[in-house]
Length: 290
Ligand code: SF4
Image 1 (cartoon, rainbow, N blue to C red):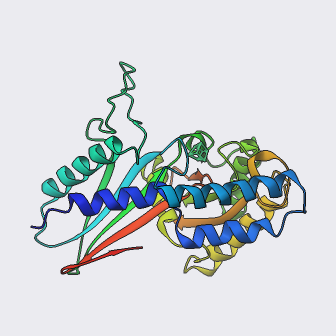
Image 2: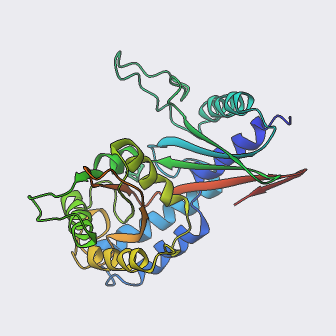
């Protein structure tokens, strides 16, 4: 089995220092929606300038390089033990090279490990065996500030008058956006999971954000709700960084899960404008970065 430590290191560098083209395009488009001379427009212009500088200098787009979340889709025969070791070695090297800020803090003893390696949970790695000859490693660097404004609801929720249906889902998602008030560095992206248990619901609400901006759920009802939530969030006037304006949310992604008859969870994972996600594909001898 090939040693991919260097390729994974490059994946980390690209993810930390540059946004995917679809995200950058959406941010640039949103500048035009804000009034000339407004604080909202100024904030978006600064964000875009920051992206250009970080890419040119290979420096992190934000001082918080986020929680590293890896999704590894591997063909039959690859060793997950070896892949995990290579990911951890690449993460340590990326920290030495300052592509990543040392971000792993032991929550019990409050000490920073200094190398972005915690126990088994940091970096977070999900392995999935697939029926393909290609190996695909996806990486998301999920900011801490936006994680703080993510929310989970157990429906029915009498505080917002949300019942156990899509109308109730709409109410709690908009409640989460309203409560965030631009904290967590708006404009953001909403990842929403309907159903599951508390754990799986949160995990899936992040997983759904690996898809490209503008792609819609195959289910027309959920696709419609995705569009509606983005539109209604932007009508709240919260704006970039909470400065007011028309751009609060860049896109919404929803996934529907199974649930127990007793529970109806809705998890809203909020991701900041620094929507860092990248993909590495190993196709025989070919190495592809998206
Ligand atoms: S929420 Fe995002 S943009 Fe804001 S500080 Fe954290 S990583 Fe950076």
